[in-house]
Structure formats: structure tokens, C-alpha cells
Amino acid sequence: MRRVRRRSTLRRLAAVVGAATALLCTVLSAPPSASAAPAGCPYVPITGAGSTWSANAIDAWVTNVSQYCMQVSYAPVGSTSGRQEFGQGTVDFGASEIPYGVKDGDNLDPPPQRGYAYMPDTAGGTTFMYNLKIGTTQVTNLRLSGQAIAGIFTGTITNWDNSIIQADNPGLTMPNLQIVPVVRSDGSGATAEFTEWMLAMYPSDWDAYCAKVGFSPCTQTSSYPVLPGSAMVGQSGDLGVSGYVSQAQADGAIGYVEYSYALETGFPVALVENEDGYYTEPTAENVAVSLLQAQVVGCDSDTGVCSNSDNNPLYLTQNLSNVYTDPDPRTYELSSYSYMILPTDTSFGMTSAKGDTLGAFGAYLLCQGQTQVDALGYSALPINLVEAGFQQLQQIPGNTVPTATSAEIQSCHNPTFSSNGTNLLATEDPDPPACDKAGSTQCEAGTGGATTSTPVKASALGTQASSKSSTGAKGTSASANASASASAAAASSGKGAGGSAAGPATGAQSAAAVSSLSPGLQDVLKALAAVLLLCLAVIPTVIAQTSRRRRQRVNPPGPPGAVP
Image 1 (tube, one colour):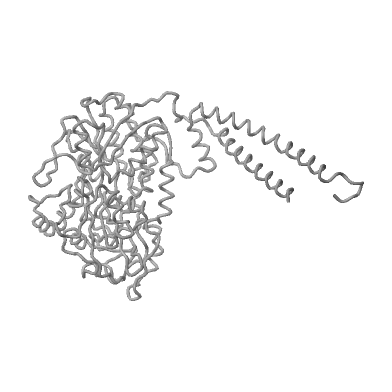
Image 2 (tube, helix red, strand yellow):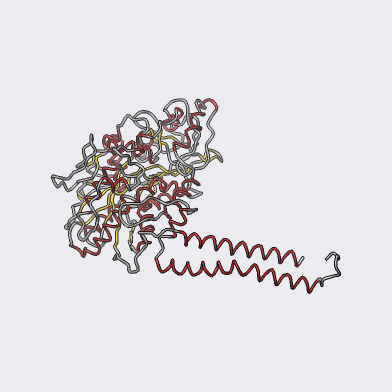
């Protein structure tokens, strides 16, 4: 027994030493990296605040750039507070889904007294995350028409078995259960985008709601007015909304969030009916298709070229009216962009050193950062907005962002890019399956972060095979998204525009990741590798000799030919 234990211990020890040596050999064989952090920190800290809608992407970027000694602090306080804090000079940059100057009832959000410019940072969809059961079955394939959504959030549809919702879902028997709409209690760009959509597409519903809650004049708003005496609940931030909806006791709740929050929590999102009568979800591809119709200030809709020759203060902001009515079957109507608000002068404590950091951070997110956003629930920016974004970064005082040539932009490895500027996400996006078309059929596949399907009634099965064969194109499971998100968070490359996202570190990828360590740390690891290599050569011999002596003491040698 002792012999068996010793052999097992020896095998484990050899395995540990071998594994450690193999890892450090990877370090030794890794090629020198041009992006290795210098001995001294080249950046000063900067701060930002604003959008929770884009916060998951910004947080990932902040984490990734820390390897370059870049300290970026971001507070997801909502778009309204972010614009205010930037205007007051308490942060170096802001983030918002809506620009300054938009009328909100009687309130006008005035532009700040400091120089500023907008730069798109993320694209994505405002989605309707929900928690709903039919009996004990969790619903993961809910479909909602625009009329149903407008009714739910203006108080005219209050139960899940409403005839409009039932008509959207021919494969389900909707439960007799109260709907609990969950809205943002803070000033939110997502609220502004959502109410702008309702104002454009369902004006009579929104007008009637404004009258009931006393919101006049009836405009889009960033602060959702809650209907007194209703089941409506207000929560702060996308995290607050998703946290409320995902509670076990929140059966019947539905709230609007950015798609990434549903992926993170493993909850489904409603498939929303578009102009062509298909129910779709905000995949990266569907958002890319939708935003082809966005009218971006200063960008030619035919050529995609962006220029601010007339110095329009709204340069690169969006008009989404054509997105809402796009007849393409792949569109997701509530798709939009979010912006970074950048300083263009040295007021409010902006310095050249801060400008250098902010410029480098912006260049990272426009290029390498865009390779990571699909896994996080967003859609990568198209090439024309990346090019225009580099122009905006060059307005920051003290920036050292190089002029982005076509070759440099192509080296971003953005998943939307092609050699001629065509948006690959949009051109390669497949049509939705036939069972997602309004009518008597309904797909079973789960949406958002849900990993399970929901069975539909036999009479509504229709062309289920097409649904299942298209599931991979429509979206990914929560586990796949979690893995992709982890890979995105771990991605690393050099300062500036180039690079690509790293996946799980294996083989050559491990070597590339390790080579980004500082030279000093690499020297320490090399020394450890040498020690381990020596141990690997010496320890087995010492162990073998010791074991042989022990065996001899326990079982002395017998006469020739004796069996030990």
C-alpha cells in the first residue's frame, strides 16, 4: 500500500512539474511583443459617466486597457446624469444615447459651456426582457407586436392573456396573469429612445398616456412617467431593471434594457414584430441591418462617407425614423447608437495629459474594442463611423491619435469591415425562419440568454424544422454568450487602432498573451522556468534513488534468482 501511495505521489509531482515547465516554456518561446507595457506608466487617470445602456461594453474596455497602465473610471449613472456631469466638468467624458438640446416636455437640456463632440461608441437594441411562466413552463419564445408593447407600457394592456398578445403567440396559451411593466426611474437614454419610438409609431397611445400622467407637452422623455395606481415599477439603471425582472418572484414582469443584460442574466427577450411582419431579436447582425437606414448627421446615406465640413454641433448623431419603417425582414426596429461625449478644449480641468489618455482609450474602443462587442450583446460599428470617430478623437486637446488611413482602419479587424466598406454583418445576416412570420406558426427556440425552447401547440407547429435549423444564425445560447463574453473581457492587444480580440488562451494564443507582460516580469518568469527545468532533470533521479534505498531496507536483496 505504501509503495502504491509513493508511486501515486511521484506521478502527481512529476505531472505538476511537467505542467509548470510547459507553461513557462510557452513564456520563453513567446515572441517579443511591441505592445508590452513600458516600465513607467505613460497615462494619467481619466473619468467618465453616463449611459448604463452601453456600460457593459465600456466596462469591458476599461478592464482591457488597464494592462497598458491606462486608468479609466466610469460611473454608469444614466445618460441624463452623464450629460450633466460632463457639462459641469466633474468628469472628462460622458456617454449618452441622446444629444444635448432635445426637448423633454417643458425641459430643454442645454449644450454645455465647454467644447464637445459626439463619437458613436456602441450600436445595439433596446430589448424587452421578461419573466413569464405558463403553468410551470418558463416561456422563452414570446412574440410581441409594436401595438402590444405600446399597450403594455401605456397601461391599456394589463394582462398576459390579452387578445392582442394572444394573437402574437398562436403557439402558446397565454396565462391569466397581471403584467408588471418595469421602467427606468432615472434619466435614461434607453427611455428616450423607447418613447421616441412610441411617439413616432404609436402616437395616439403615447398621447393618451401623457394625458393620464399629466406629462405636457407630450414629447419623448428620458424620465419615464409612472402611471399612479398601476402595476408599473420604476428601477434605476439597466442593472436595476434586469435585476427586478430576473427575480424568482417576478413572474409576469417585463422591462426594457440593452440586450447584453438579458444575456448576462440568462433570461429571454421578446421577439418584436417589424415592418415586414417578422418577429426578430436584436442580434448583432439584425442591428447592423437596421442601422443601414439610420440617418447620421454629416454622413452620406448612399456612399457612407462622413464629413463635418459645416461644423454641425450634432455631427454623428442619429435620426432613426427610417429604421422604424424599414421593410427588410431582418430588421430590429428599436436599434440605435450610443455616443461618447468628448472634450474639445482645455476648460474644466482638461489637460493635454488627460487628452492623451482619452485619445488612446477612444482609439482602442473604435478598433480593437469593436471586435469584442458582439459577444457582449452589441453590434460593431460600421467602417464609416469608425473613420469618423478617429476624426473626432483628433479634436481632443493633447491627443496623440494618428490620422487613420484606410490601411490602418482595415487592420482593426472589425467584424463589419470589408475591403470596399460594405457592412459584412448586414450582408451576411440570413432571413428569419418562416415560423417567425406573423400568422399561424410560432418558433420554439429560446431567445436572448435563454437556453431552453418552449413547446408550442401542435396546431401551430407549422414549419418548426426551419426554426431549429436557423437557431444558430438567430442567436447563441447563454453558455456560449458567457464563454464569448469571458473571451472578450480577456482580450488584449497593443495601444492604438490595430489588433484583434483574443479568445481563450491556448497554444500560440497563450504565447501571444504572455508576451504582453512587462520585460521585468518576463525576466522573473524566465528565471523560474530555469529552476523548474533543473528540478525536472534532477528530482526524478533523486526520487528514484531514494525509492530504491527504501525498497532495499524493506526487502533486502535475496539470493540470486529469488523473487523479491
